[in-house]
Structure formats: structure tokens, C-alpha cells
Amino acid sequence: MRELFEAVADGEVSPAEAEARLTGYASTDAGRFDAGRESRSGVPEAVLADGKTTAEITTLAEAALTTTGRAIVTRIGPEQAAAVTAEGVTDDGSVTDEYHDRARVLTLHAEGFERPDLDATVAVVTGGTADRAVAGEATVVLREMGADVTRIDDVGVAHLGRVLDELDAIRAADVAVVAAGREGALPTVVAGLVDTPVVGVPVASGYGHAGDGEAALSGLLQSCTALSVVNVDAGFTAGVQAGLIARTVSAARRESTE
View (cartoon, rainbow, N blue to C red):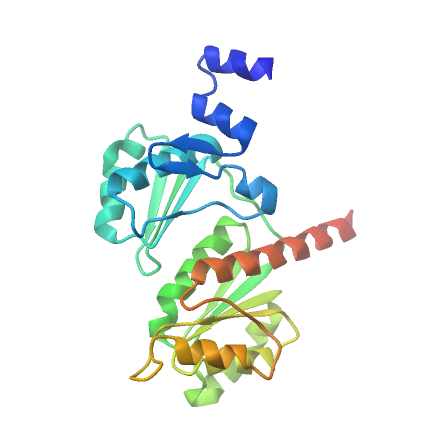
């Protein structure tokens, strides 16, 4: 601990980073950033932009970069993402940023940051184009967790041949995230055709009664085939669940080769 205090005094470690090492979180005016989440649970912490001002998001992103070398901001629109980076987070050139437009996710990486590298593949599958935003959120978090991602889009069950044409690719993955709106049939069909874990994501797309994702959620919860189900539009959660499975698969593979 004395070495840490001396490093703070010498300017080698920031007070926020020191706090994060001691407590597992960094305190800011915008809230506490859970800097220890990834080391504690394997899940990278993210900042949800919904309900936060640009200044608050920027403050939390800076805390994330200082304490973990990376910031993931979800559910953020393009204008607010541009405003966050314009606030000075990337001014000195040591931070790279990427805005994932369809997924509405902003990722920032400090110089020298290296993502984990998992020996595992996740298939991210969508029923239709309307599902791509949710699937994109899952894809970003999976890649940040170090998994290889195979995207398979627009294979909804209205034409079952589309998913059958991609079945080999889905079966080759270690785990699948399957996003679908309307009645949510695709994840249940896929789960009946593969021997890998399936995480179903109901999407809020459809007409009229229960078209806000309620029908898809109910269909997945009542699935005759075995699969896991997350909340409506919960792409981040689906990505995390699949990422944790991929992490376990990767660890087992590497242990078997040692």
C-alpha cells in the first residue's frame, strides 16, 4: 500500500486509479465507476448513456479509461457520442475511439490497452434487419471480451431454408446469441438444431398487440427447446452471457493443450 501512495505522490498513479485499486471502484461527480467488475466477474463494466447528460457520460468514460484502460458506453446516439469525444477524452491522441452506429455503442481504448484473446467463437444470429441493433450491441461486448464473432443475419423462420443454409456455421460456434422480434420463433428453432448453448434475445419489433417485444419474450420463455432468455432488447446482457460461456470454453481448451 505504501508503494501505491508513493506512486500517487510521484504522479505515476492518479488518485482515481489508486482508489479503484483499493476499493474496486472510482468515485466521480457523476457516480461510482465499477473498475473491478472485469477482474471480479469477467464482465467489462459499461456506462449506460440513457438518462445521463453528456458531461456525466464523459466523466464516467474518463474514469473508465483511467482505471481500466477502456470505456464502453451503450445506448448512446451519434450526436452525444461525438460530443463525448469532443469534450476532451481523446484530445491528447493517446485514446482511440470507435462509434458503432447501428449498435449505438461507443468504445474508447487507452494507448497500449489490449483486449482479452479467447479461443472461442460465438455466432450472433438475427431473424431480420430490425434485429441488428440489438445483435450489434451483443457483438461489441463479445469482441471486447475477446471472443471471435461470426455474424449471421436475416435468417428468420418465415423462410426456414435461410437458417438451414447457415446451420453449419452456427453449429461450428461454441455458443450462439439469437435475436428475433415478432413471435420470437428463431431462437427456439435454432436451439432445436444445434448442440451448443443458445442465448435468445427477444426484440421489440412487430405489429399491434404485444409487438413491443412482449410476444417474443413470452414465446422464448415458453420454448419447448432448451435455451437461455434475456430481457427484451438486452443485447449487452446476451453478449455478456455468451462471453462468459466462451471464456470458460477458451480456458478449458488452453488447459487441455498445456
